[in-house]
Length: 337
Ligand code: DAH
Image 1 (cartoon, rainbow, N blue to C red):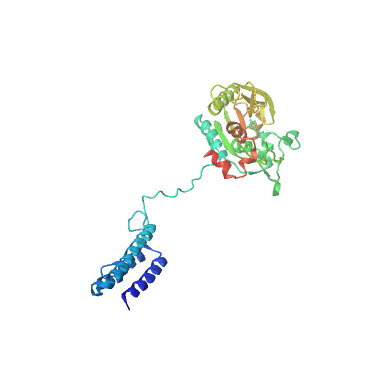
Image 2 (image 1 turned 45 degrees about the horizontal axis):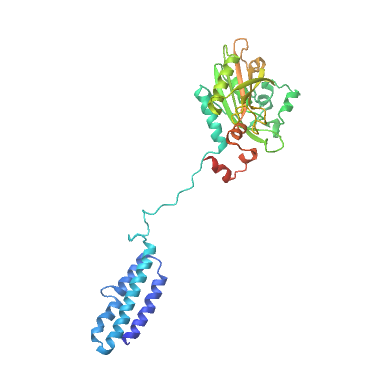
């Protein structure tokens, strides 16, 4: 075959092979096969000396053009597979793809912060079942059957006469029945109530309850623990007030309000212009509750408190809809990494 035709043929063949090549190894092999010392294009160049002088320039130019074209093309393609020039596809100097890192849900974060503060005050942490008996959820807590106070907590009943616990206070009933004072425990967890779902209430929500039973425990101990907690969690300078209230399992009972940390008690949208935020329920454990658990109420006294988790979380992070916590919308959750 005349040299010029060979060159055209070689070009066609080489371009097709480079085009189909899908690895650095095959590109390198093509380079050797065409441009190497014993390569096909090199062979053509070597034959130039035998070409009659009047044709040599034309054929020589065509052969050189092909050589340069293949060299450039190979270099370009090789760079795709080995961008840094290293003869490997893996380039450790390139920035990696960061893996998506998860984080605790905001509710778990808040519960963790609350527990951490009480843990620092010497409270143990205990858990109980979500599906409870009427006894531990109500009766042991001094809600007799048909007592109107049961209506304070609309209940989901499940098969076998059991129910979904309406608060975490039944963990207190269980621990009192099992252990002897001194006891100092907090009980974080999920609770359920048959409520209409709105921006402010949900059928599932978290609470942290706590209680202490020992000889000589007084309302002053309750006050000391709760004020210390609020100052730690909401801020040092806040004011507080204990308001009389009612719970069947405490006597006397109270609710703790703190001065609004957003407006410092002057009145704003967050505190509904009252200057105060309701934080928790508390009181001295009713002697009936201790006696139910077989604890001598003449010898021992105790205090107890219970707080929602969503509400402080909403207040602190200015979240206006409780449903956000349960929707699993990562755009919302990512704000609290
Ligand atoms: N269990 C009550 C509720 O869900 C909250 C509560 C109030 C718990 C006073 C307590 C307490 O332990 O002492 O409404």
